[in-house]
Length: 147
Image (tube, rainbow, N blue to C red; front, top):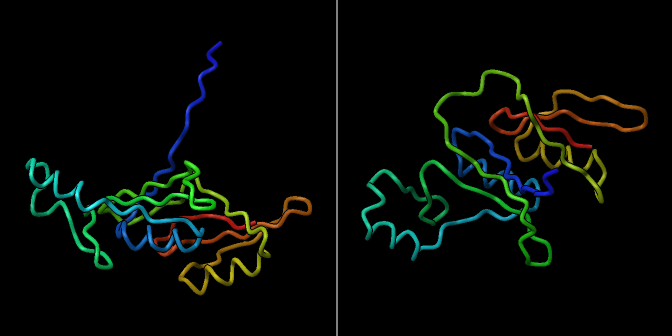
């Protein structure tokens, strides 16, 4: 029996990676990971970036096609991370995998209202026994639930 434990990273495809990273960081109370300027300078000096590799977002140089967010508690990175990968194609089908946002300590209704104010859409509601779940879409129509 293999007793190895693996960590995972969730990957979200997006047309506008930086807007999605910013939106999800605000939605979850997480932190956007911006590349260190000296790291970017070193990559440029080594010829590892071309003129299309970087863009500016909110006054920071960032990779054109990638971003990430992570959870911090009391200033410490918990290791939970979502990588946002740039894609050109629009989303056309239902996700095969989605995540659930646990509303606690807020109420489900308060979290749903805040996310709708931020640009999410509520698309459904269901109950499994006493457990209520609200189906939603983020600004790029990726499904998620709030419970």
